[in-house]
Length: 154
Image (cartoon, rainbow, N blue to C red):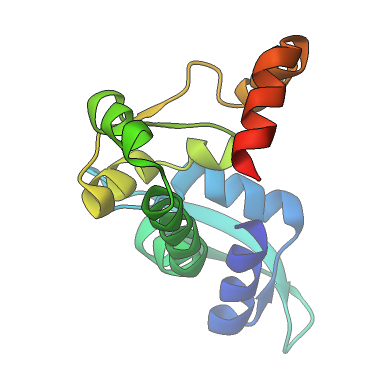
């Protein structure tokens, strides 16, 4: 996502920004679905034509456009995973919904976008940054469950 923001700013404004700036933009005004309140942010970078520092203001609409391909890839991956899900598990997903984990899940309104695209309940894990590691640790500590899932998956 950060690279998509960097490339968008470069293409649209001929402005080179760093990775930290792209990350800050994503966190502060990035979203996967329109926000209730519009946001904007002042950013600084180097003008690629003149080679001098430049400041400009960008909006959440622009960043949503910059992230549209990345978010679309995530939504498509969710759809594909749901299509491949066994019917028994699909019933659980309809009842309990999808739980988003990882750093990307913190993108504003990603849950709304996935909810709209799948018509399923979507929520954010309590600790999305650690949940994948914690879940993996639990799986590795229960060898019988790990073996069952590994055999069923292949």
